[in-house]
Image (cartoon, rainbow, N blue to C red; front, top):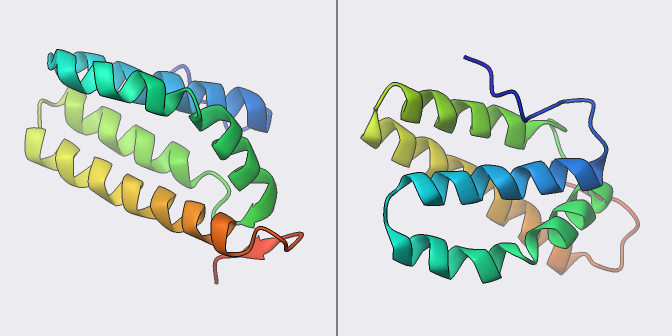
Length: 114
């Protein structure tokens, strides 16, 4: 099943808002109130960071987050707990790499991940 709230052709700011909604929904669905409590303040920064990454980091695949979100969603929908954990870890590793590129090269106009 495709996630209706993720759109490849959305504007970067809209995509960052959708990214935030996705992560908060995953946290909510964990039924662990501590995760949601900790993530909300952290993710209040996400739209700005995500927008900077989209504008500054030239990724091999512009829609990498969409791929990982769909993969995580599919694993959750199929009640594959280990698969969802693995998919989310892979997604967070890519996001961390992009964030590090942004920080390390904050003076460059365009940053390549290759």
